[in-house]
Length: 272
Image: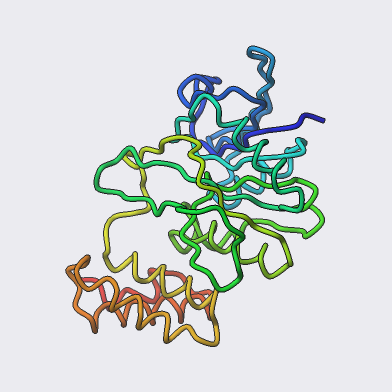
């Protein structure tokens, strides 16, 4: 069993060129969404890479596939648009060495796309259940034994390729907190991510608020209306939609999550 492994979701790969593109210097598992089903292995430097290619659609499902094949003590989730700093593995392992009781540690990554900012961790501390949770998957490292013991998986309803466009990473962290996992935030930077090829985010439009409404219904079923109201107010300068339109799309998203009704069926009377 290796000490460290990257678990990367990717698409349409025919070789292991992502290793060099991402500057990977550790063992790695690629969950590759494509039009075929196959398994392949590759050795590089002193490390091993495994690629599980399926026609399974969705980020959450493919993160779960990578989890199924994970076998290292410490793992790091990844997307294929990140380029790691040379010392990323040492950063992660040192952090877990310093926090012997940590189940999960969340790190900083920088944005390589000027108009897409990433919330940065400004001090090292333990994350609490009711703290803010603006952290994507590529920032999450974890002890495989902890995730297995708590039976933690990614939702298949949220994220790229799913019914609702985003939120799977935050739901994973929330599930971990609710299960009793000890989560720490670390100011160290693992690498830089590019949002140039991101497909799910099309701006603060109807689809975005629809997805946020579903997300708040999943995370905060008892207080979802307060969260929706707060989010509509907080985004008043970011969207062309007016306040009432944003609330309506948030409500529709929440209703869709509650009934698990698809976006098209609910929205057909609202999109011209």
